Length: 182
Image (cartoon, rainbow, N blue to C red; front, side, top):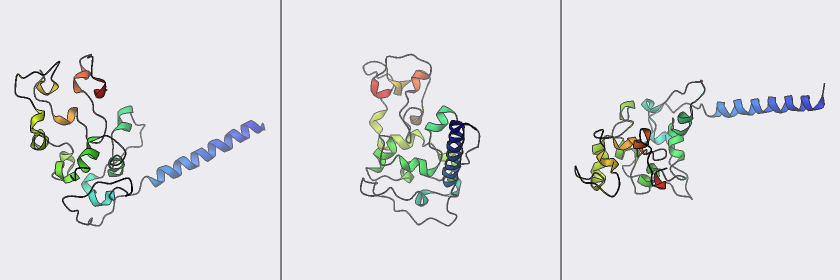
């Protein structure tokens, strides 16, 4: 046998072994015991302290089963597990970090722990951000996405907590958009 072929086969085999081992490490089930109570104002993680344990925020209704099928491009960008959500707390500019750094917790926006409460209602956002929604008919310079022609949008359609901002209007419109929205 050719030496290069044998070497290539060995490297491929090692890669497969390491890949399967790393995938096996990521399938640790959530704890079944009742998590310790969390205070209503958990301090945000800092560079010197690790983020709070995901087990503190995890409950059985939050477990997500990820299929073995090939993920789509958007599926890789959207957090699926509590661990993926908490990874962004200390190293991203996403809203979850901004909220946590101001002393808020998951429960501030997610009032119940159920799959149907995954995205907060507009009223939850407006409670803290009342000036974010201009009065009907008020237009700022350029377009005003908060006054959309298709009706009332949900805040989370643009303002994602655990991933990058997405200007919902660009799904249909080709706009000269401010670079901060790209």
